[in-house]
Image (cartoon, rainbow, N blue to C red):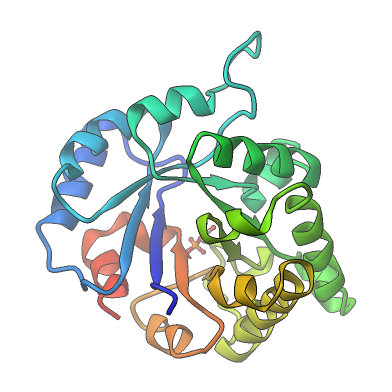
Length: 248
Ligand code: 13P
């Protein structure tokens, strides 16, 4: 039984006071108990949001991290620093980081391994661009992203990893993948994990869909057998919408 996981990726939105306000709105709402709820907030808000969610079931995520514990990497944030705050998850390899900040499959792999070594659960993002989909290369692209991201990761660590399939063309565009297409790719990802780690690992790993998830399309996505949750951008910035998505 895979526990559904719905995470709000706030991206570069919300000051500290705005973050506290939003998370308080979320925590005061009824949240479905059979769903794991995660908020991925900006670095600057992590500490205050951590305090605000104490005693609730809401989990905390960072949106990125470096792979070293410390060192001369000006401007970076390490897993050691994040561990002290008490984060549960960290988004790794979001397409916006790949697109704008030179994130590569290699750095995604290093970060995923580092996160696991600090008992931070990585949410590893993969997904093809529109151009790649139009050339029917989406499976090849995603397979390569997955295989590279998982290099050196062992079967025993699979239970602590979440994969987010986020087709780049569906992010922030209002254009969602059809639930069938999203499910097909999530099933394909599960198959890759199965080849690499065996059937049990394939059954265990949780795979989210992300890209224009809204209160109106979440149910249909969650009804699909290979989709175990959602990584929500824009709609996670409005408490009412995010809560509706969690309570799909
Ligand atoms: P949107 O929900 O705004 O399309 O963003 C998706 C996303 O990138 C979540 O990580």
